[in-house]
Image: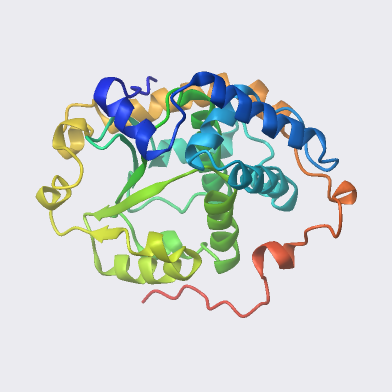
Length: 308
């Protein structure tokens, strides 16, 4: 598994967009400021390495205050939703099965604007819906690997969702509570700059799913969802050549790319295990501890996802 890193003019453009200091010493200074701040937070771990801190800085456009907020949420979520952050081992049958029936690899190349593209598709419309929590956990695991391995920094993420095998049965287990918890994790705890979401091979179910998810998304992200009636329409946004061969591109088969990510996640098994202890300790938080109600606003009034 190789994530092509930006270079040359693309790298310079990304650094300008992310407001990255030209002098590496300034980045080191910022990392030092964040480490000093972490050292004064009795409820937060102190184990964040420099590579991941650089990714947080880039994802927050080098706003130290924003990095502090993200880091607090990063560790808080590990305590608030342990179901997403424990037993993160791709060799477990439950997780291995998900990778068999759902392909979700980040692609190796970059768009002309320097964005990473992530594909997501099911493999068979007749499969039973896999464990939803484990699926969300796997997505966050990939996010954690990318924190360490996006060494130079990218301009943002582009997601392509292939709905060709999506059926109402597949989404019956997606409860509003789970969806909200997952999307708060992604939007508030990770330094992700989501630039575009593209849905291809659409069916009538797609509108229902999109309308179900939209209330949990930030407004600017809602406006970045594109529904495509043809692959040619997608190519206007994402170059054809950088896509997997199943979509007319030259990046190799999506199955092979997915297997490469399975192997990469396997390499991180020991690290994932160590990270289970790396979470906020609410009993030590200055002021009031953060509760699930404060974090997720769970009041029992969510509508269920109903698909005819």
